[in-house]
Amino acid sequence: MRRITLLVLVMLLLVPHQVIAAPVSSSELLENSDYYDQKMVEFEGEVVGDVMVRGKNAWVPVSDGENTLSVWMPVAFAKKIKYIGRYQVRGDKVWVKGIFYKSCPEHGGSLDIHAQSFRVLEPGYEVTIPLDMSRLFTVVILGILTAALILVNHYLGRGYYF
Image 1: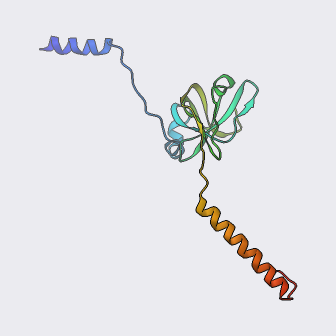
Image 2: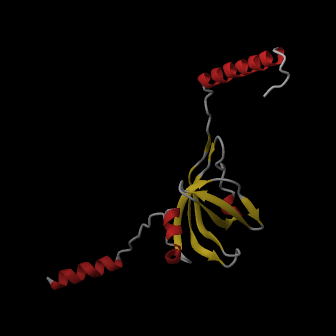
């Protein structure tokens, strides 16, 4: 019985296994920044704002829906980004693996992630917002009513508008 147990243990140690780490949320990183400081983390989110190229690297703001973290990455990674989230655009959903810094010595003490691996999980897309006819109708009616009241006020001889 001991030989079988020992054999199973040896086989488990020899068989390569992969540890799957779940991405860490921005809230988890912010609340436990001392624990994660200068450790390898995985982070997922939508690219939002502006990608700012600085020489051979770029700042990329990534939001997981709770907070937005700055990611410092090589320009080659940043060039893979096609859509940046803003009004009427859903940004690319990306996965970043890198070193988290609570107070980065290279960037004046800012909180950031230095990406070592990067990939686009889902491409972004443009969002079309349909015209709400009931709101348009309300705006037109209120505009006509406002113009009529201004004209009535003017012709009644008061001479002022407010």
